[in-house]
Length: 139
Image 1: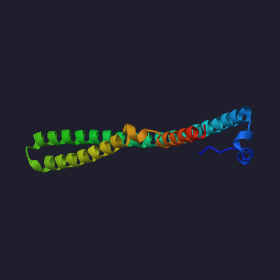
Image 2: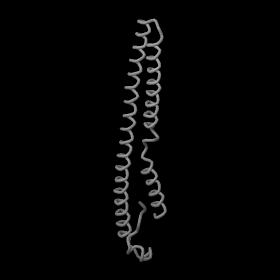
Image 3: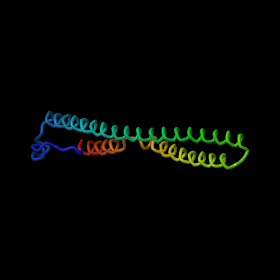
Image 4: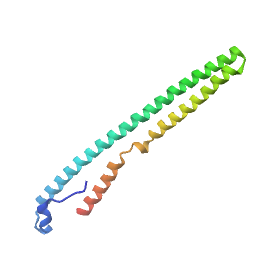
């Protein structure tokens, strides 16, 4: 949100405004700016929280799939030892490998979404930088 001067301040030359009017406008604009920035921060925080929740879901999915892979691998090992033939155990090992690959993919996706730079409130930071520059220009 860009700073705007009140209508009457734009019509009058700078020399005709009193210090009280200038200070009053400045503090009014700063209060409006702060309120807008807090609103933006709340909105962006809600978006980042939702993103983190989805990332947590992917991590949980990956963990459950990894557990399933372990169970399949253990079952395959038991079948291998019991039968001493490859058919049942080989099939179980193949399933375990596929579930393990799916688990790795889900964990990778979840962890990638939780990187710190992805959770930074970039819009708010950019807006604060622009507002700071605008204040510097007008003071």
